[in-house]
Image (cartoon, rainbow, N blue to C red; front, side, top):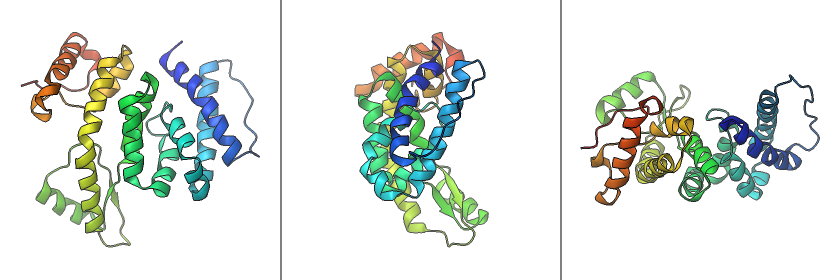
Length: 239
């Protein structure tokens, strides 16, 4: 069984459980292409989209079923499609709580859950917003480019929210080190080449970015990267 097939096998039953809560009257497509993995992928995409639509307008239900939604997110197979469930969760609970839930899965979950959490992080982190491109460029010149998974949104009809932007950056600075270490350890724990390829872009091999207690783990990751460079996305030095 491929890695994708295994993730779909874990993910679809969790979507089915959510569908009974959020969209029980929807009828799902039953046609088959003859390719079981493609069919499962298509079903999951359709189910996630409909559940996400319902979550977007059902804040009370999202809060009531937070654990169930988060468990599904941790088993999702798609780092872009998973926003359909993550964004309603962030709107209902706030970015900090969702980020901390993602980190809990990344730090203590199964292999599959760690991968799902790593993919979920990008959409859990709050974006920084600007009214104009000029304000964005001026801010970048002042601060320099942010490291990590920071999203930028342009909102021309609203003034740049300096306070919330500062809060978003502070929240990411606080929690990003846990995410980086979690991805490092998930990389070390995985034997799946494609998982390692994805995770490798989420942490650095620069020892200066870690406390001394973690240097041995960083060096182990560097050794793995050196022996299998095709499944490693960056070339950070360890010194």
